[in-house]
Image (cartoon, rainbow, N blue to C red; front, side, top):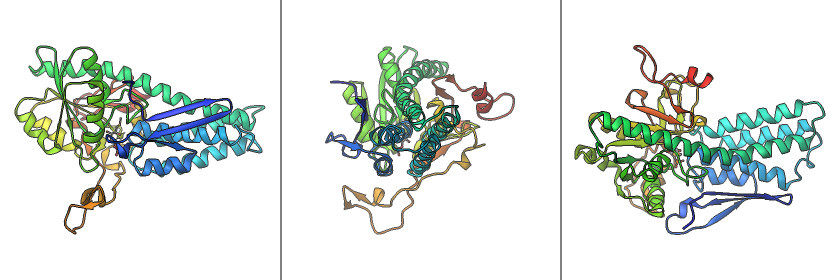
Length: 372
Ligand code: MRU
């Protein structure tokens, strides 16, 4: 079996093609959707054909690249300024698809400022602007894979060290619990938290992976379980509510999860249910880690209370495959929760571990570290 991927992009002979794996049909059906531009990408993101913070950003950027290439590679614009304005307009639109994951808005800011800078250069043309933007969009795909592999190595070492410091995993092999899907299906490939689990496995240091179902959308049961089985990792699926009981039985040496947005103090928004696992891990003295690329960090926000939390349709809870399974009752369906930095042992990035705040300050010293 080849390696899993959720995003396929080709650019040759003056044409570009973007396809997204229809994740709503996994694990039972494998279907690819062709995305012809930002409008189709917006819908695919909003409706969860593609999901996971890094994958959302990459799919959105590549939808812009497809649009730019297939509409004339610059020839469709009268001027460099018009090309830059189009990039800004499309990225601003794409950012409105889902609010919590920050990777897309960071990518949008970067692409908009690249387009502006290119347009301001002496002798700039619409073509030079679109070529620079297209190249940057395509580079995101490659950078994400490289970041994930590096994160995997850093994370494997950090989890093992933290578990062993607590007298766990003395044989050098870890039992790791994770939540939601943070693997190849949520990124360009390999994954963030699931990348750490993959790295442990590659190094012979994974005893067992436990993936939580991740109600209500079942990213764990449908997607992470699919990836674990695909790669042949020793693994078990549990209900979200079984995680504390598993820890109480001493069967979890470390927890690693992904992130949708990390505030400047380290408070972390991730899939709903993550906070419960962090509380349970704290109670059982199990180290709890977050793995995310630096493009998931939002240094503008002082703390997690400022992170916008997406609320999704009631039907995700009340219905299963179109069939109503809950009574007619009001529903609160936040897609994410915020785990306070004080419950997080370490934040793993492609640049290494984020340093803890010094002295009596709680949390992480993200701003100086990012600026360095
Ligand atoms: O609603 P989703 O499926 O987009 O939520 C995904 C998560 O919460 C992931 O943990 C996060 O985006 C990190 S993916 C590498």
